[in-house]
Image 1 (cartoon, rainbow, N blue to C red):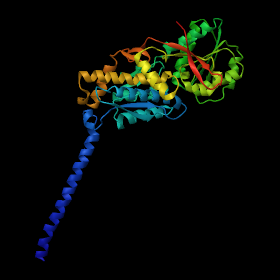
Image 2: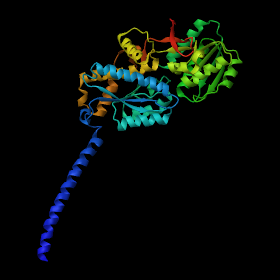
Image 3: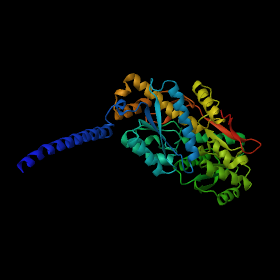
Image 4: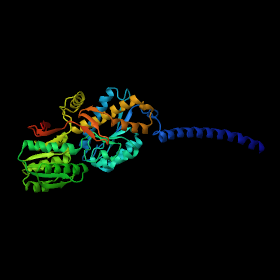
Length: 416
C-alpha cells in the first residue's frame, strides 16, 4: 500500500502541473482581453488596433424622418470618399461608424451611447432632429465627445455644452429671408396664416421666428394652426385658415407632414403664396405634394450654384451618383465631416494624434475645430466661441415642378 500511495503523488503532481499551466495561460489571455477593453480609453488610439480614425454618424435610418436622415448620410459618405482620396488625416484614413437614431429622443440617446461607449468614436455628426439633440447632446457633453450638428437649427443647440457645435445655421438667421422674398413677389400681402408641428422642438422654435418676423414687418397674423408631424389629415386646420382669407401661409413641419399640408391647402382652394420652413429643404418633398408643390418658397443655407472649388467637387460627386442637385442637409453633413477632417489635420501637425489617448484626442479636437476657418460647400464658415456657425451666404429657393407633376427643382430667387 505504501508503494501504491507513493506513486499517486507523482501522477497527481503531473496532472496538477498541467492544470495549473492551462489555467495560467487562460488567465493571461483573459487578462490581456480585459485590459484592452478596460483601458482602451486611456491608451493611444494607435494601440487599439484601429487603422482608421472612427467618426460616429448618428442619423435616422428609420421612422418618419428617415428621408432627412438619408440625405445626411449621403453627405458624409461623399465626404468620407473625397477626403480619404486626398490622403485623409495626413495619410491616415477616416472611417465612419453609423448608428440609427430613429425619429425620437430614445433612439438618439441609444445611438450616442453606443457610438461613445462601444464604438469608441473620436467625434459625432448628428443627430437628425433638434428635438433629439436636446436629449442626446448632453450625453456627449458629459463624456467630452465633440458633436457637430448638420441639421439642428433650433435656438439653443450650441449652448447645450462646450462640446456641441453646428454647421446648420440658426433658423433665426435663415427664416426671415423667405418672408422678405414672398413680399418681394407680392407687396400686397397683409394677412398671414401660420401652421406648425407642435410635437417637434425645431418646428416650435422656427414658428416663433416666423411669427416674430410677420409682426415686425407689420403684417397681420390672422391664425396659428397646430398639428403633429405624424398627422396625415389637415382638413380642419386648412379649412379654418382658408376661411380667414390669408394672403400668405407659412408652414413649419417636416417633408411628409408639411408636403401633405401643402397638398390639402391647394386642394381646398388656397391660391396664395406658401412658405415652407427648413423641414422642406429636401427633394423628397416633390413626391409628397407633387404638382401642388409648385411655387412654395423656402429659405436655404446652401446653393448648388455657389462658386467654389469644394462645392464644385461636392456637387459633381452628388450629381454623378444621384442624378439630381444636392439638397441643403447633404451639403451640411458633408461640411460637418470636412470640419472634423481639417481640424484633425491641423491638430496632427501640432502634436501627432496617434500619440494621444482617446480622451485627449477628443478634447484637443474639440478645441481645434472651433479655431478654424473653413472653405466649404456652404461658403466660408467659422464658429463662435460657443460653437454656433458663422456663415456669410444665404439663399431663397422656389419649388418649380415639371409638367409631369413628379419631378421638380429648387429654383433660386434673388433676394439681395
